[in-house]
Length: 555
Image (tube, one colour):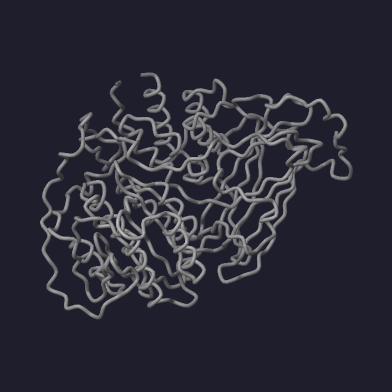
């Protein structure tokens, strides 16, 4: 295997190095409430709490991991490269990937409908694999989460009453001169700090034995400590932990020192009663509900539920019920080896929250500090996008990503159908690849197509019709935004430049990692060139990751 370039490896574990010792039993010391795995959802009366244990923090133990490479160096000023890297066994991890979207003929299916998605976990998780010198499993790649990991040059909304702007642009596809790329971008309203609603947050932390490694519980503590530093005087945080049982270890407080002290005392050991932990966390959230505020459970785990309620369908049903009562769910994934990404992504989607994978202290800073408003404060819910293509100008199309967010056409106008939420300042990007009418496409002509050849009619100047539905956070009735994409966009399209070129490069990278045959001979080197010379750490890191993938593929 070719030696990796140390410049691309993200920071992380050395910043939070240290692994807690495991307790001898599954019993969790709590401040008053406990849920047994044998009776999930039931609480006993107040229990006396002994003084908090002083947990020793020895150096990390790596006996269970196969060391495959050692390297050290600097990626940038102050960013340390971890000295040890491990082989990842993706066979022990759980993913629920979808096939690449099928081609649609406009004559048969002119309408495309999907729910927005603002998760980013698939990108950070793929970075973990590449950082270890391995290609990520195809089932772990969701192209929309790659695209939405980055921010683009969309205009900001002017008022909260219309909580996002809608932008469209078009370019020639760099991998197929016969096709065009239509980008649709949403940008959410940036909520001023003084206008933030109060937040009732319950940190739900997995402290089971599977979390007993340097890239899990110590990094969880660092991540949630970062979030605690962003709280205001009107916010409240509770901490619930679970291993073989679940318990409350911190009553609601906004005292940052108390929150960090409680985090510091935690250690890992035992089995994983995640279902009981969720039940208790939701109960604490209900008991401390803030009307008109943010009421959210933040689950931090490797997703390895193995005691009590562990079936994904049962967990989804639970989080949907709580979502409807006003309590949302964000999931933060950690670790390597037994990571259950399929469960983490799905319950976050059904819990009207977002899913992120935390592979470093730097990523924790990005998700829980830099993007804290987007993570916590919803400005629009049940956001759906629907596009109708004009057959006079477009013959075929496909949506890059969003395979597990596809909705039926009739779901768009149905306010009972749940969809994705947009947080303050969030951005959502979707890219369609389309074949102009009269140009050779992916699918050959059918014998009887001429018999139903469309006429342009009164809509000859329109390429497509874009509609968005959304509800305000406290609303039950959706609002509608409509935009027309002019047919002239095809004639004026050129190869992508600048911001559009970078978004296209990210989409191509995701599709290549998924094995998309329609990219043809478009190489990783071509993806890297298309990305240009981007500014900012995260975009520069993207180019390094593409180069790494190219090197792994060549071995």
